[in-house]
Length: 490
Image (cartoon, rainbow, N blue to C red; front, side, top):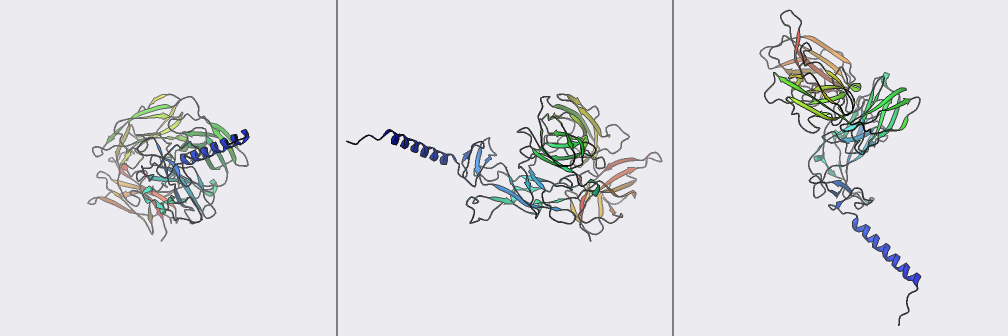
């Protein structure tokens, strides 16, 4: 007869069996490639995989990580920029990453989160954009410098590193579009300090953060709501957050002689406003449609007549092609003061430039929490002068002396062409360009001072009617976001 086991030995055996069972269960719950997962779990996927959303439903799947790899350089001398912050946005301008910091050689590696198919691959070819910021540089994109698109169709499998065990499913995107060229600030605007903080909300990703004061600074919060505002001069600042659907409480910040850290912007309970109005599209092809955006007045750039648009403050919703031809509504508007801008995007339409008639002025509104605000005047929108080049659809590199070409306006007496650089400086203007006949386009050679290698510029043309000796009136002009070019010497 077998003697019974001592009680201590029995308990030890049961404990070891229990631990082994838990260990086996942990292994079983860590998903393999293509397995379902839950992002909140401690180890939702095995090493080398991440838990990503499915594109076809609300579930998640274990998939190989995808990285964006590139450089941040000085736009003028192409030197690397160390310590720059880079984040990625999807086609609705919502962030799909946190922040990567560039190394001494200007390089960055940025993991991104994008929807996957049933096999864990990118579900569709998405168009992404990057945002970059650094001390003593303009925010990218900003002013005349748009963000170049990055397509997930360009994803490549990473080469297997024999010294790394968990990189078998790693993919990356690296091409010319993942290089960010930052434009240096004017010397008078350089220096200052950095304000670091976060928006205390799980929905804070993409919030436009603005330090409002003597010379407002802005940036975009990453997917986790973290942000860094560079080049803030000493003084008192009011820190605001603008994002559709969020009532973010402003915070007062004093910058003295050092960086400011750990600023927390709380979400209030005051609610958001609804802003509505209408547009009137005239002298344009049938079926023309546009969009309307709200831009905080503190970051509106008067010389360009636009500025950064907070996520969600657009009609139609972000990601939807322009479709406004009459009434429009923007819901979820945080309390604040805004410029209301129609036809900002490239839709072959512009706000009628004749300020002597109704509906052509730039409208500023102030809305309160929970308010329903109706813009009283209908915006008059007309067909734009089509840009032929340079910069018809995206910035173009130009060497030598540029020639600006745009569509002829059939009823003009003369044209005006003005060139600005990305810092907002007017470089050249000619308001006595004769009207043309017998040609579908107008060509105007640049006749201003030497251009700076690597700088972004925009030309804008306006057609004018003399009105028989009375006050002349503008008829139409080229679009705000077209006519942008990068000078490359020669």
